[in-house]
Image (cartoon, rainbow, N blue to C red; front, side):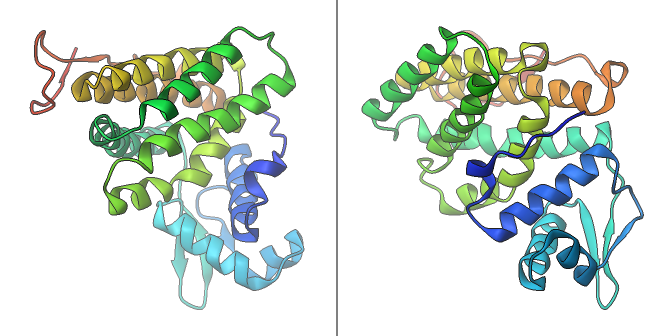
Length: 248
């Protein structure tokens, strides 16, 4: 698996860049479960001060990828299909709720603008530049919803996973047309929000992230690790957002 750096996505902070580099090393197997990461050694290897490394360790510990031990540095936790699925389960719980809450709040102009941009990319020829642009559009889409959910703590919790999710998206790219599928799923979410249907919008987000889970597993760990994708639906006529979805 080859991961190419996306400067615009990760150059916002040194901490973000260090997080991205460590994640890449975990995904490629360079860092494995049980490996010890020493703050000073990582800083020297990456050519940064110890402060962004310390901050990166804190961020990665917060999402359960490493354990920080006092005076011992950090220990990489085991990472495989089960861990990916656990992380993405948390994502779809958080993001489906954010979508449901954002549905009556999002400005129609913002929705129509991102819908138009999504459709334009669906109509364009696929290329390396196209794939890189989709990474940014994907982040814009998810951030638009999370930042407009009306719940600051929920938005912040979703943000904790941003570096991880973007690194996984980068690793997956458009392999097996994963980005094509994501764009079509984004359209389903956007259309449900435009019609002000919280239940349908939340369900579309769940299905989007579930499908993305198995795409990530296939790329990072091989097709043999992929599990069937469960599709969530709501009973006909139940669009008030008050009932829990049933998994088919």
